[in-house]
Each structure stands twice: as structure tokens, then as C-alpha cells.
Amino acid sequence: MRIHITSVFVDDQEKALRFYTDVLGFVKKHDVPMGADRWLTVVSPEDPDGTELLLEPSGHPAVQPYKTALVEDGIPAASFAVDDVRAEFERLRGLGVRFTQEPLEMGPVTAAVLDDTCGNLIQIVHTKA
Picture: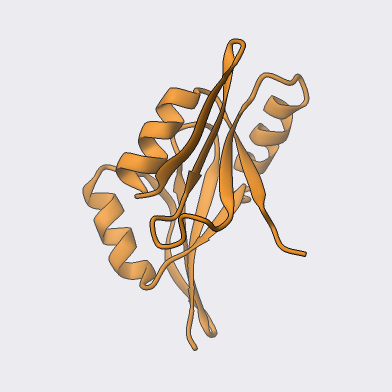
């Protein structure tokens, strides 16, 4: 068994697509109209057949209280692996990305947390081998 698709709830799918592709560097995999919304997924360019991230619309009434509570408590909705958290932090900060946690070393793990502009906190993380 393996993870095929996971999702983050986003306030605006088009804005999310721009952020997750143009800023974070993912590539669009699927974009299928589904009424007012879309089945919209992105993948890592390093693993185009790997796990897909669904940019899920936030329309369900339970979503906004859930997202608000996570953000208020500083809890990331997702965690993405990077080769070098500090370098990625500098690159993203240079693109205007707002971080709620700068790179922090915790034993073998270095992590930082950013605002995805679509209602979520996202963690970037690197684990020393």
C-alpha cells in the first residue's frame, strides 16, 4: 500500500495553482472541470508519477473552522521534504513568501513553516541522513 493522493483545502484553486507551481515549484498533473470546481492536482517535478497533491476546494462547512484552528495553533496542513531548508527558505523569502517559523534545527531535522496564501500553513523539512 502507498499514498496515491493527499490534499490541502484551498480558498481559491486558481490562486493555489499559481502558488504551488510558480512559487513552490510543483507541476500540474490533472485539471478536470467538476462543476464550479476542478479536480486539480500537482506533483513534484522530481517524481511526476508519485504522490499527487489535490488542491481541494474549501467549500464544505466543516473546512473553514478546521483550517482556522490549525492556523491559529500554528499547525501545518502538510509537510514537504526539501534538500536544504535554509536554502529553500531564502529562495522562497526572496519571492515574497511569508514564513511563520524560520528554519529551526531539532536534532536531525530542520524545519520551517510558510503561509501558502490559500489559508494553510505548510512545513518544509529536511532530515539529516
